[in-house]
Image (cartoon, rainbow, N blue to C red; front, side):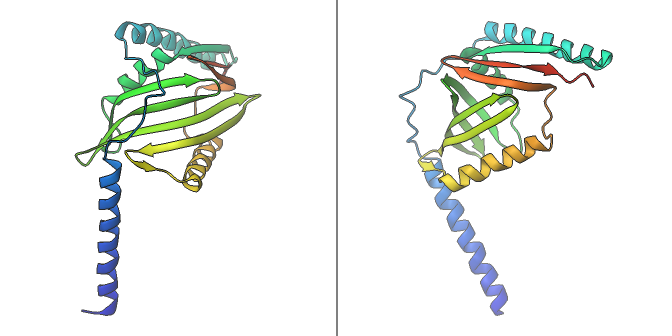
Length: 198
């Protein structure tokens, strides 16, 4: 066995061991949500919220036809956001399924908790996010990102915020509304802006 092949084998074994340790601790219970009031999804609330979103979509469509931007303001409650998260959870993305998702809105930020399933293993997660937009300037900070008993270190959280910010700067994903302000208070989020008109 050559030295290079032996080193590759050792590296693969090391990666497998790290992933096994990560999987073990990430799948362990230990996620504390006792400080959160987690609303249960509500079908009627979701239907009303989807109706309001459809009205915004129609405004966006009309704005694209006329070429004129239109003012938009949307108030989203904690229960509406939780119900929407439950609706999004169904199909899963990149082989990861999200379910039992909840959102808590606090002054200046939100807490997202739930369960993700990947490769047959379930992981409980919690993300404490500070977010606001004032004068079209995004302020974003991930204060806590936890999976099971694993806490994501500060530099990794900062790198994640940098990646999200750069993706938004280049227009991926490109929202249909230019958000001028996004403010979160206790139990609700207020988004104000205008449609693009193009």
